[in-house]
Image 1 (cartoon, rainbow, N blue to C red):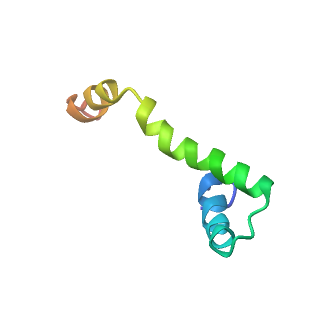
Image 2 (image 1 turned 90 degrees about the vertical axis):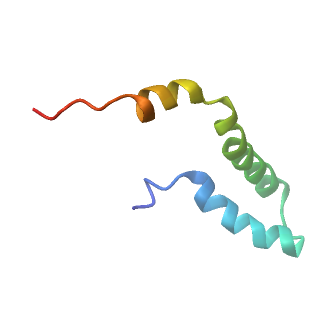
Length: 65
């Protein structure tokens, strides 16, 4: 994967954790880390899991032609 394909939270959160542990987070880093973390936490909560399970896991696959 190139850096263009890596999600922002994968780049930002690992870099923010050491700053948080050292007590050196600036307000901008704190705000960005919080926004990335909320995206990671909230996205699975709002996905239509019944639709996903029905259309991608339970549905029989079509044969290749």
